[in-house]
Image 1 (cartoon, rainbow, N blue to C red):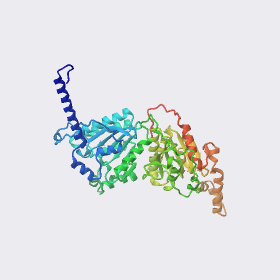
Image 2 (tube, helix red, strand yellow):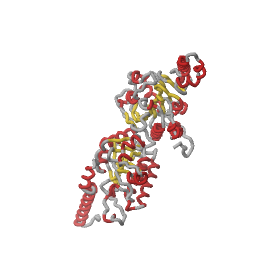
Image 3 (cartoon, one colour):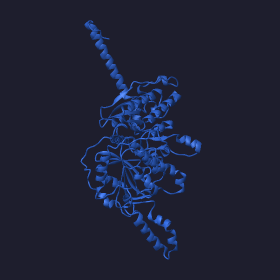
Image 4 (cartoon, rainbow, N blue to C red):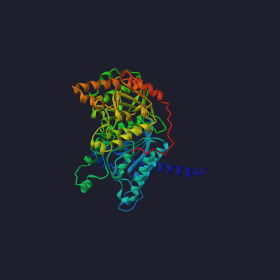
Length: 531
C-alpha cells in the first residue's frame, strides 16, 4: 500500500508491486479465457460444436460481454475433485447487448467436467438469473451439459431446484430463451421446458428424462439418442422445442432475431422498427390467393406475407401442429403476434396439439405486451374417438382460457369459414376481441350448410320425391338465410366487412388506435386454467 508523503523509493516499490499484480491478473484472465486447453477445444470442434465463448460471441454484440465470476472454483472434495479446480467451474455467465439492448446469458462449457452442474456452477447461474430479473432484461441459456455432477451428490440436485424456482419466478416477467447445443438429460431438461422458447440443433442436441439405455432396460425398446430426444423429435412430435436448425450459427442468428421482436420485460413494449413499407399498402393479390370455395385449400402463409411488413415473420413451432400458424412479425413497424388456421393442413381444424400450441403462444404474447391478430378459416374441432379420449375438451379450453384472459389489443379477421365452437374459441367478439372484421367470403355459422340442412330438414328431405334435389334446395336456403356474408355484421358480431385488398391498412389503423388500451384485471391471486 502506498503511504502519502513517504520516501520516493517506497512509492516506486508500491507502484512496481501494483504493476506486477495487474500483470498477474491479466495472465490469470488469459488462462480463464483459453479454458482447459487446445486439445479440449479441438475435441469440441470435432463434434461440430462451438466453445461456450464462441457461442457467446455470436449471441452478443462484439465487445459487449461482461463476465461475472470468471474466477469461481468449486470447493468440493473427494472422488478426485480436489485435484481439479478449474476457473469458471464449467459455466460462463455475464451480460452484454444484442442490437444494443441488454441481454444476460450463461453458457455451459462442455470442456470442463462435461458442463456438469455442481454447487459453485449452480450458484453462478442463480446469480446471473437474479441479475436478469432485477435488471428486467432477457435471459438466454446456452445449454451443453451432462446433467448433475455426480461427485457432488445432492448439492447438485439442489442447484437445479434453484434454477427451476427462478425460471418460474421470472416467467412472464422477462423473456427466457433456452438454446440446446448438446445433451440435456434427466431433471436438467425441466429448466428449458419452463422457459418461453427452446432452440435445438439437429444431430448434436438431445433432451430426454431417461436415456436410451434406461428405456431399453425398462421397456425393451431400442432407440437412438436422436430418435428418442433429438431436435426433429421435439420440434415435430413432442412440441418441446420451438425451433430446429442444422448448425449453431444460423440458430444463434435467429435467437438474436427473436430478441429483436421481444420487449426487455413485461413492463415494456417491443421495440418499434421504422421502415419504408407503407401501412396503407394495398393487397390486391389477396383477392386471388384465397378461393371463395370453402372446400379448396390455400397457403395461409402467403396471406400473412402480404399483410406484414416486407413479408417477414418468425414462425413459432413451425413443424408441430402445422394446422395452426403462430408467428411474430411487424405491421407498420410494431410487433404483433399472429394466430392463423392453415387450410393446407387438416383443412385448418383445431385439434389437441393445435389448441395447446396456440394457447401457449397467446399466453406469451399477452405476458409481453404483444398485440394479437387472429386470422380465421376454421371448419371446427377435429372429430374422432382419439381426440375425445385424448381430452380435446380440456385442451381446447386452454386456448379459450388464454384468449379470454388476454388483455393486449386483440383483432380477429374471418377470411372464410368460421364454424361452431372453433369460431368462438378463435378470439370471437363474444370472448373479448376488441375488433372483429370479415372478408366478403366469410361464412360464420354453427356448422357447414350441408350438415345443418341434413339436421334441420331431415324429415323434408326424407319425404321428398327427389331427396337429393330437396337437399340441394335446403342447403341453398340455409346459406342464403343464415350464412350470407353480412349476417354476423347485421347483428353486431362483426364490426365491418372489408375489402381484402385493404386488410393491411385496416389492421394497421386498428392496432394504432388500440395501442393505448387499458384493461381492468380481476382482483385475484391467479386463475385456475385447464393446464
